[in-house]
Image 1 (cartoon, one colour):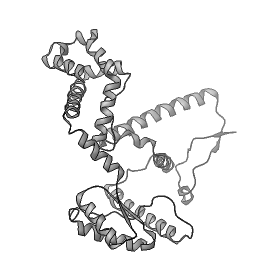
Image 2: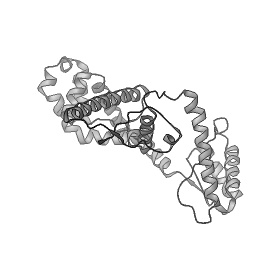
Image 3: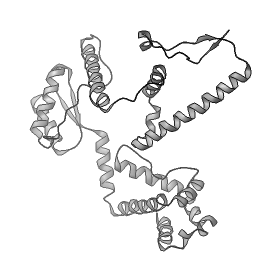
Length: 292
């Protein structure tokens, strides 16, 4: 007898919710059986990955989510459930699951407040739709005051918001109402506003507009895009960040790093032999690239 790691039984019980299925005993197989099984499992996994990737592409989900540990937990749980697992419904994800997670978080926060030792870290308390009064400083102040009172006046020393004008007003009101409290603008938002102002300077504005033209030209032509990836070693020109203006700066940095490779692209024999090199637009893009 040997231990086979495959789960052959589809029978489920209450304990399956809390424990992973362990190895089971099975008749010893010969080397060819194991080789065939390994080959099949690899092909099956490749098929699953392709379907998972297609779902990501259809949804427009960022590739960074693959790095989340919670994804592996979900994949293992699906595997334990078995092939009859149905995808969660819109209602389950949007309402049922979210509400349950909110209740769990509220319970966790409540337990944290009861602990005598000092708390360290960030905790989610609530999510509020303020679209109807986000432009009214007094209303924002009332909302923040509500949560200050809920947490406990003695437990709050700082409130951080973005730099929207009404949030600034609300922060100043809070400092008046609670003299011991400090309002602070979000540093990340401050930097993003600085980036925005920088792009209002003519030379920076013109430079990013030129980069956008070059990037749009390349990515809208599959053949040119494939040539570009050969010269840049599959590096993409757009460097995505959490904000539009930070994305602009990172993209310009990538253009600077790859400028020589892009120029080599437009001087390559493969480019000269293509119909694109004979078009006026292609010639203009090549000229713009030399100006970046």
